[in-house]
Length: 348
Ligand code: 13P
Ligand code: SF4
Image 1 (cartoon, rainbow, N blue to C red):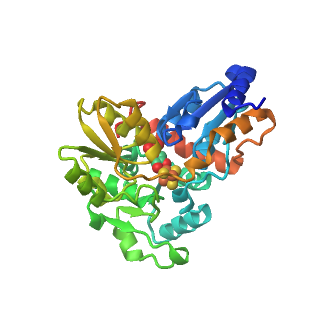
Image 2 (tube, rainbow, N blue to C red):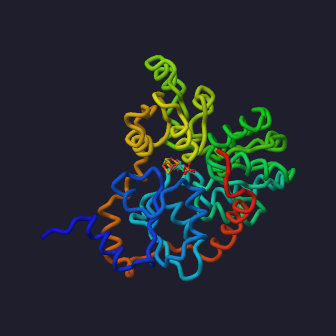
């Protein structure tokens, strides 16, 4: 008789008991989410690691999330990802070596900038931030962390997401003339040092291919077809999209936005479709939840129930995510600065 992936996962749970914890990001498919002990956004899942006593942590998300979990894991805990090829396109837009070269080049212009990286980045970029007095942010606490970094009075290098950076500057009232979008071609040889001297926030030109597809035009079309509809989007969307929406915020914010919408409302959500469809099903008959655009993260989709089952079947012999000490220690310092700077409940 064939054993289903679900049966394999349940058998592993019985075998490993409290030694196993399965974490899933909200963008995972329902087939994966239903097996998770904890479902959350990046910030919630980062915080969760410190509370876990499980020896085996299986992270269903993209690789930077599993790597962050490995950085935060206690000695003796092992972190696994069911498909190590599930990378984040945005995080790959800031290769560690290039980020180091450009940070040093900017310092050579006389600016002792504080680097602040979105958690969607490699361990090496987080380590650079830790080494240079900087930190990490998530979409839930970007405003808090940019305020923290600017408060040091040295200007900020924000990476890798230009959109989150611009939207956070808009939210904090930092005008466009105080921002500079970095030209990272030719290892930074094209960066204008005079503009770099003046800018308060220097933005790395990375972006999310899933969210930048969601435009202000999609919002106008949705509103024309559904007058009175509410619209909320993720801050990885372009600034024009965020300005057109009723609200913007992290994954957890978007979940609360739907939850708090009045009964009978039509709510358009601009983010990864798995989450939006799950919300639509959860509130069916009470309110109508519609994806602003059918936009899926192909890397999140690399994690499947079958791969989770295959990994759990033989977990004790699977290779865990490994982060070398020279990356882990400064990267942890950067993440710990974020956890310390943010109260446990952070606004979007
Ligand atoms: P959150 O920080 O909202 O979890 O988002 C992570 C992400 O990858 C969004 O594309
Ligand atoms: Fe990266 Fe975008 Fe996918 Fe999030 S949705 S993991 S930012 S590519």
